Image (spheres, rainbow, N blue to C red):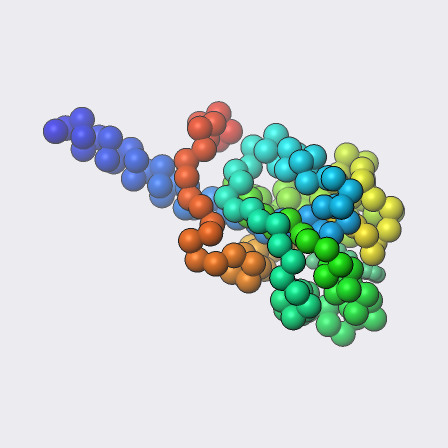
Length: 169
Ligand code: DAT
Ligand code: MG
């Protein structure tokens, strides 16, 4: 009985710990999908220690993409950006882990590939800002908004990763 209580307490503890981890929305854009970079990009996030919580390949259409990039709607490059984003399927993902938003942005590299450091995804795989391969949330608030926009309730999983105890203190 006591052992069961201890086990229940322990499982509650990891559930709480798990739900507290930050989440970020990472999307491989149509050029990344076509160029066969899905696996390479996923591998970088896995190797860093992040946990894949949701993934889908989809082409949700212009209106959805306009909503995703709504804060850029006044920019001159907006129509071209939407056309590019709608030109093929994207790979939408939720990655979980402490500081996943900040670390995710660093792993992506600067928006303009000429400013992206070698070793970053953009710094290693692209040249043109209009074909910069991947998207990553820029704040915890936008991550929450984007995850809600791209995934339905229940599509984002919650599970204990087997190496959690080796990634976190
Ligand atoms: P990021 O994707 O790094 O968050 P952002 O949100 O400012 O950058 O812009 C969204 C995307 O729009 C970006 O990944 C590529 C495109 N973009 C940004 N600035 C651009 C520019 N000056 N010319 C063409 N496309 C641009
Ligand atoms: Mg952005």
